[in-house]
Image 1 (cartoon, helix red, strand yellow):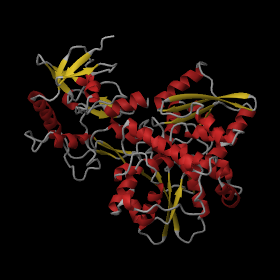
Image 2 (cartoon, one colour):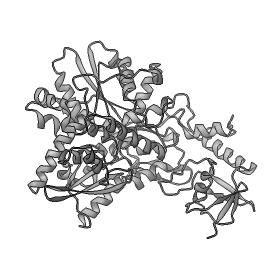
Image 3 (cartoon, one colour):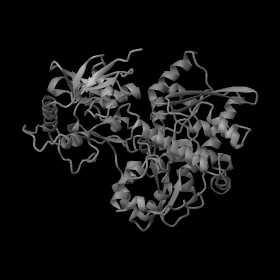
Image 4 (cartoon, one colour):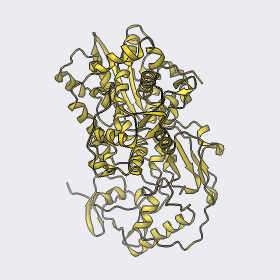
Length: 561
């Protein structure tokens, strides 16, 4: 069969089901600039930076033009360069250009393209006003004067997360991105997932930082500062320091945190192991007593908030287990409650929604949070750089006792399907390596947004779904409620791909996301403890720390709004 092709800069390029010219151009190693294009989102075509010129002189937006056999286009003509520079100058003229102090400096797409196209001066008067900050959310901060109206945040909030907390308002030169009625974002139905900050090309939406206050705590000699590190963090930050994407750098993280001044460094995988035991027990009880099913996991705070806003009737279906962060925060506060120093618990998380979770009244004792500060992976990177540490040269160190032992089952919580696999390992009768390998092929692994699996347990078929992305979760709920699907156990993560793709992580490509996932499974494979119940630390926690406070410290009740 004869192949169809286009000519791109006089190079024949085969058309192979690419949905637009932009994908075809990038396939041959030409990186056309874009602000408003993400392959996972609908095509908006607003920024016009990806325009190409055909042989007749017509201009086409590459992102919204379907490939056509015989079409000839140029990507870098003098006319196109002039257009792109003009667009950049107009954007800069209406932009708050405080680049040296902007949280997005060095990661800003507008800044990057201005440098790429050699913008040395802007010929137009700057029309941006003073900073217009919306600081109402504990998770993200908005600055309306840095918005370039690319619409990325609007589309990801609606199309991927099904939240719709923000949208375009007004028309023409008055157009802006805003919550309904211009309410503060913290007073809307925003779930704090932070995916808007991930796709925002400028500093218009950034993840809120708490590192300034944390530095003060670290310098207080009367304060004992303990820190827990989520599983997904270890495979995400290495690339920011010149190491391989997905490389497990947990040992270097531990050493760095000690040098920064933390008094105790632990792994949230301990909390994940506790979650496996408690959640499995709850699931088995519901399964054998005709309790409310399906049981939805409760690890993801953005998912919990989504249910509170959109499906409050399903709150009883959500596991009563606290998230691993909150379980371990409770254990740490209980373990060190007799300390003569004031005890602060810090959590390093890949997730922005954890910042809100830490403020919830359900996770406080006498008004004091079990987790006092949540910093993201990017926040940790910032602290390491501020401290002047050469991360790639730091010798790895081990976690602190008495919680220095974790299982591989706890580590894989950081990727979509990891919670489910850990639970399956717990209920499985076959604890051999061969048994583990069989579980890996049940369908729970992979980066797909929806996965299904079935296992046999005591003569009964148990149906399982694994979902990441809140739009996928909402679609699944509709299928369950219509009777189209029937599940016993459903794992939900708000961020597509799970915590390795959390909004608090450094932004990476789809290949990078797979590398992070592989890094966690590699860490699991190298662990000599594969099952949560085999972690000897848990016995000591139940006997010496929790005692008669298991339900009080490890479980939670979410009241209906």
